[in-house]
Image (cartoon, rainbow, N blue to C red; front, side):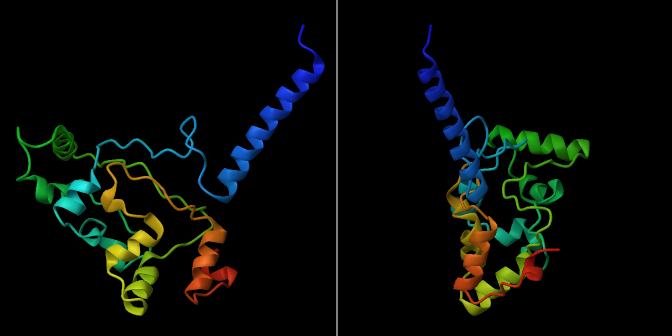
Length: 186
């Protein structure tokens, strides 16, 4: 029979591990364990390395609303087909065939959300892009990397920055942005 002292130590160890996991997820990104902290599986693999890095496609070409609206938006199937009407066939990767299937069926692609913020937080991409491009002299892509890291180098996009309140407030302080609660919270 296992002594109670050993069972108590094992129990305390488990509680400590759970506490560490929860606290890390609360203040930063969660550990990549049991699917927590992992990039969501996408219906079609979209290698930014090919599209952005190799082909030189600018972020705002696909994320059209990023410089003018609140959300960056993901491209519609029709927008993807703008290029892929010519980039398909036997030489194209199998993922292009999936895209064509969505297009021909008239179905949208339900992309998995990668970067999340709480529902009670408003984040206006346009204001941030305008600030970093006009005030700091960044390109749009450099601006995107501030929060999204170097997506151009990612085969699978994952959240690298915590995007928690402290992270955002620190960035606002570092860049003389407003820190009034009503700026970001509804």
